[in-house]
Amino acid sequence: MNVLIIGSGGREHAIAWKVVQSPRLSKLYIAPGNAGTMSCGKNVALDLYDHPAIIQFCKKNQREKFYGAASHSNRTLCYIRPV
Image 1 (cartoon, one colour):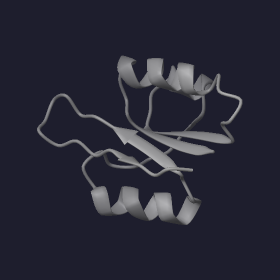
Image 2: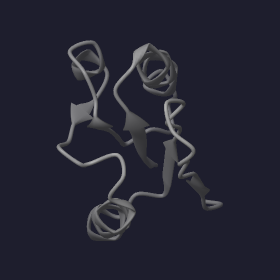
Image 3: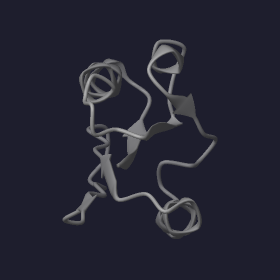
């Protein structure tokens, strides 16, 4: 399965570190990510608050799951589709 994690902090790095250990994972993307997440997957340049761009990226790249949490704002985007 392909996964997109949305965020750039330590929490996202911890999630990416654990997700990358799954044998079911095909590709892991982190948007926008940080230096630590580069060791877990591919960082992609997406604006955390541009939900239409995130959705377009997921559709274009056939992400089955994406997770996002922005604790510094009231905006959270989370989508999980059964596989």
